[in-house]
Length: 281
Image (cartoon, rainbow, N blue to C red; front, side):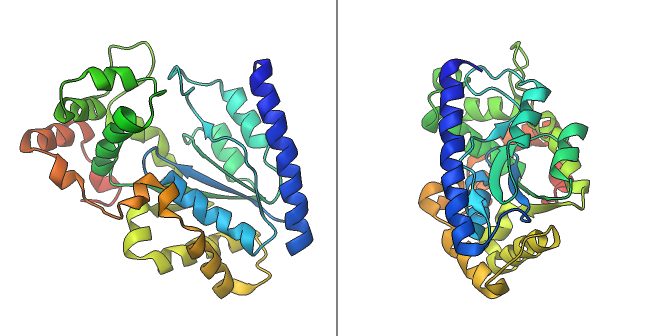
């Protein structure tokens, strides 16, 4: 880590201590609270789930960590990050912190997030909607993305959508097809210590989904001084669509408008049974 990055991290850690102190003054010691961690497949509602977990800080001994997302790949270059750096990021979280990231279900990472004192959540979305969202994000919303210039160079939306489905196997940095990108996350669906959530359920069954979030946090050790009902209200009010581009549209199944018959056939060929395995058949 270079000096500038280390300085930024140090500032974030100092600010975190201030938030933790204020949280302890309001709701009691954070020492017995779990780390709440929002894990996701990219473009599947990361901001939404993080907002929900941050809502706990309004009514329970929790604090926003303010730490950056814990990710598998370096954003500007697209290259894999060393595993020891990822684990070091996870070890920075303290009891009562809220964090988030995009993490594969690798054994050492699973061990960290499933350990006592951790309450992990994994949100995913219909992968057909994911590839559509990915095109908009890379092309229009993130100029620093490693593939931004390439997507902008493509002639139309369909060619970009093909790229989001097929990946770019010609590169020396990993950008595989949609199935291969999702497979490293599938292990989270098999872990009872991790609550798997569908993005769509926050739209169609929000109250029931928020209750599942609260119950999982309780099972993993979070104390709720104000009770379940007040906590549910806090989590619901924490959702701010303006800060969640995926949630802002409030629509699901948008892929049906974006996919031509040819694109749908291509997706099905590449994804195989992924849609069915995720329950979207």
